[in-house]
Image (tube, rainbow, N blue to C red):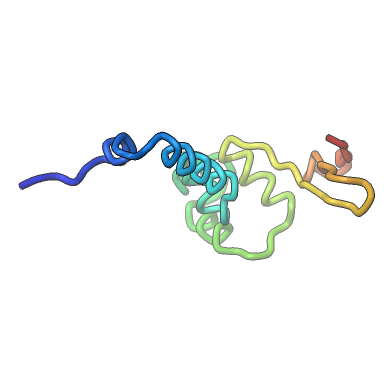
Length: 114
């Protein structure tokens, strides 16, 4: 019985320019995390680990991951439990891109121009 080839074996057979394009697209996709479940998985955390950090039970983490509308404070806590930092990116006409930091922290929001 033969086993399939690994990703690295397949990539090694491709021309260099194609490998670079694939890696670049991979990085783009990683940067565009769709949903909290994907974020948690990217951070290599289980629902149980997130629940423990948040001080809730695992079913609560499952519920948070499925919600489409969250308080920013809940989102911030979830992101921090996954080992990250929440930053909100804002584009204003004529002002460029701004980053709202401290999102979900009562009384600590500030706007920072890049």
